Image: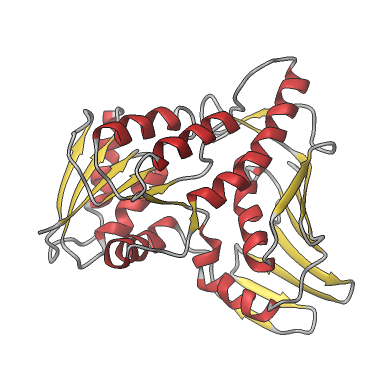
Length: 319
């Protein structure tokens, strides 16, 4: 009997999941759902760009929900109304395994409600896709760092999507340092929010800082005038790693190097799905831990959004 997967959301991220899943040798029954028929059409084209002639997958593309139980459901919609999407599927389907894209939702209240819905069934296991902790590039770095706790970690670049991507680095710091996020400081974030490439969503520039439980500081900056995108992990002034994700090079101050790459969703989703279906587990952050991380960040971004836009919104429009 084929394992059943439902993929909700056929946009850019959803299509990347689909391409990764298409590469699996395991025979799967895949339902792809999106209200946007054009997104479904593009997803179908992308799926068949992968050589599936020797595979036995059964796949369908639907603009109307199918109420069929499944082994794994992947929520790859935008953050807006993700609570509603999860509620709809959780109330109608029996699904043990859930894989959810970040940002989980746009308010702490909605994040708490997602947890409540998923926890109604004690058998449900869910993860959030903040994947640096499963990338070989970063697992090699974690081995080098061992228990040496960095004092500061800098992430700097141009318009790299700081509001929606900071959660990746919060998760990375927790993982490599065994610390927990304590607070987020937005005092050096620019007052003006800018429109994102995705309609209806916004981004921030300036500097955002995050404090962790054993003293590490994560300092993130977005400057429209910059082109380079660099990460620095600093232990002391003369002991640090510089990470160039674009070119796949990690270089220590001693001259030691790690060569690799940051994997795309299409590179890792196949193995992720295989792990979940075969073993009932994967090495991504579980939903409980990710929600804890998200809430600290989302609360502060929402405060900043309301103060500097003279609003009293209950959600922050990031994706």
